[in-house]
Amino acid sequence: MHAYCLKRVALWLAAGSLSGATALSAPAVEPPRFQEVYDLARSNLAGVTEAELGAAALQGLLQRFAGQLVLETNEVGAVAPAPSEPPVTQAKVFDEAYGYLRVAHVAAGLPPAMDEALARITATNRLKGLVVDLRFADGNDYAAAAAAADRFLTEAGPLLDWGEGTARSTSKTNAFSQPVAILVNAATAGAAEVLAGLLRETKVGLVIGTTTAGRAAVFKEFALSNGQRMRLAAAQVRLTEGKPFPANGLAPDISVMVSPDDEMQYYADPFKVLAKPVGQAVGPRGATNVAAATNQAGRITEAELVRMRREGIDLEPEMGIMQPRPSAPEKPAVSDPALVRALDLLKGLVVVRAGWGS
View (cartoon, helix red, strand yellow):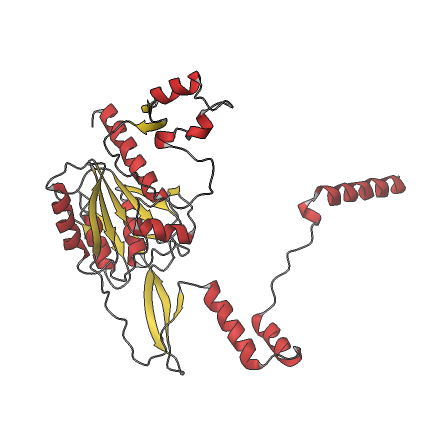
């Protein structure tokens, strides 16, 4: 009986090890203490100086806590230059009904600049929606971020707590009430991130793009012995009902992945058509060229003739060439993927609102 029990226990242990039984799994190993590893490397790592070890440790620290630890300029007592651009750098209308505001900096002048820009584009257009473009936007004025968000809210309530101050929305009847889409990317930083987060948390609109920089915090600045300055995120920024702003950045509701180089080109010109691989040559309105439209005998086939007539291309028999029918020039189409997604979203929301009778 004793041997039988031992055999059963052995089989049970073997089955547990094969199935990954947690009761018998090896305990997780805690990572070594930094100082222990650093001392061993300093004493035994050949060809590496203590200064190099210190620089590597500093680089790792700054990378691990990027956005929370920021190493500033070498100039002692230097003050960051004021933004040279106005808070709102573009205000336009797409498709005759969808406004677009491009914000460069979230600073004290942003709320009145947004008011002026909206008044200008709504003077001659009845907007059905609005795109707020916060890509590449920055700033550290959290009060301005809250005041800008308040332009879209009708009811009073808590908006923001940044440790050094708080902000609330105000009750009003003239808030912008049409659907809103907010564009962000990895370069959306600081108070611009907070503005995007506020607009989403208060259900003003959806955020489109890529995760933001993760630099929304209350910073304290310290002077270093070499003349540089270190900015540390000493306190969290909290949205609406005390919800902390995500330390790793604001994740979008709708992700649109674009390479950094392409994104910069679209940002400069939303209608820009980027070069694509060269394919089959096509003629006006997508018609293939004359050589491709002819048979081996050099004559245009009846099927090709019917197709070209359907596509609006006239054939000049006496000249032996094709001439496209004159037509009104087409408006350029938006190519910027994030902006295209935002406009599509707003158009869809307009249709839904119309269906619901709101």
